[in-house]
Picture 1 (cartoon, rainbow, N blue to C red):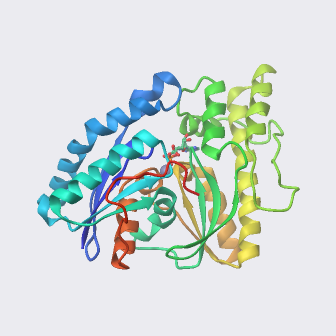
Picture 2: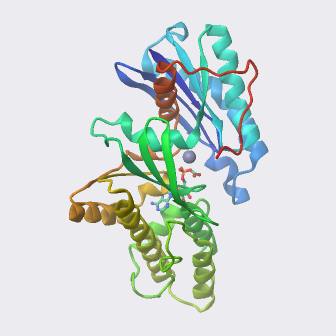
Picture 3: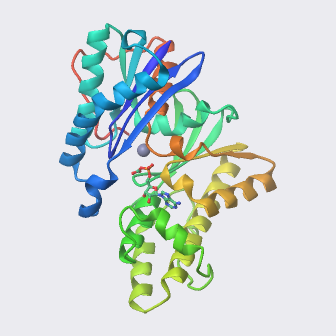
Length: 327
Ligand code: KG4
Ligand code: ZN
């Protein structure tokens, strides 16, 4: 089965083709960062309009990359939520229109299930059950992944997501938007113990996070005239310590030995190294999907759709409902 995946939940337009026997055949991504950069955040209406413009182009590019004709597509998976309503609707409409034209089934997919299962696209993959650490601009979640479709949310951020904390702190330091990667780069030149930022919520039981206080601490350090590289390094260290402590607790609680780090912040090198050390010590293993599969992409959506379609799942409604909020 060859499944076309479509992702338009936020500011990436993506189309991929996944073959259930040959693997990933095409993975096209267009980032809208340039469209939104001057606004300092994603503008939903602009996102939706740009998806509409780019979807047909990416579809054609994906067919060329996979060396397929459109009638060789057997099924379509698209992100039905969570995400920006208008943005989601462009992908759903494209998927449903194409499914009708090709007379093939379509299936709406949960965006986070995509992130959580993305590492299964790799040859070296985790085994069920595993702990998924989802760290992106919109999410900070620890998820017990027991089997396909069997997930338990163990903990999440009660306010800002990790990537959001990175981006807001970067903005305060004039590093542009989204500035997570730039902040991490600046941190390489700073001292990680220069400023004692809080490790939020580690003295409380449970696996939830809170990162909005860190951003305030960063603002105070900037106002106090501290060196920006030191602020960046100390901030990054505080985030990594906090994540590592809670991940350790989640592993103790579940007894799992495999961890997957996913989402845009999974590109963070010091975080990767820390988790690697941690899992080596514990005799476990951590899996990092390559950056292209960590950030928003359609390959993960095509994969989830393929797994679910193989089980006989199909979209119920003839219309194209999307779920901007989907627990
Ligand atoms: O998953 P993703 O591409 O999409 C959104 O959730 O929007 O994640 C993007 C997030 C942004 O907040 C970005 O600043 C952050 O990932 N990010 C990083 C790094 N690279 C990207 N944060 C810390 N260190 C990095 N190297
Ligand atoms: Zn995402």
